[in-house]
Amino acid sequence: MAQHKAGEIEGFTQRNKINRLVHIEVFQYVNAAIRREKEIKGWDRAKRVALIESDNPMWDDLAADWGKPVRLLRPVVAGEKADPSPARSAGS
Image (tube, rainbow, N blue to C red; front, side, top):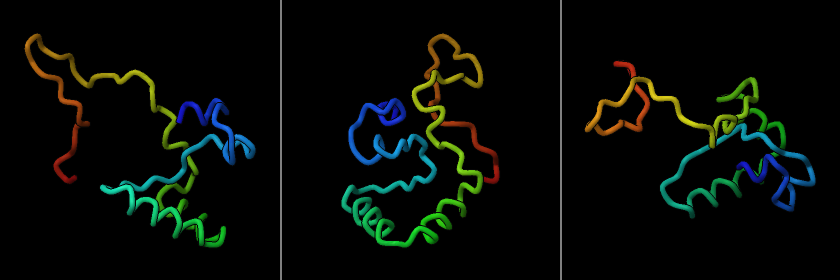
């Protein structure tokens, strides 16, 4: 993602100055991800925009903080293993 943001990767994203990640879906298997990408690419622009805006109405860059140092929520006590997962509320 950092290379795309810096315009270092030649191709569509560099030519069109695309540097924000506005939609993401997670798949266990790469074949399922490729199938989904092809499905979305076959849609018209209005349908793709609706998909983005259903989860990200402000078109925020979902990768804005990728690669930045992580701030711990509490100090790690010597000998204690840090928990890399974010804290979750009882309702999630």
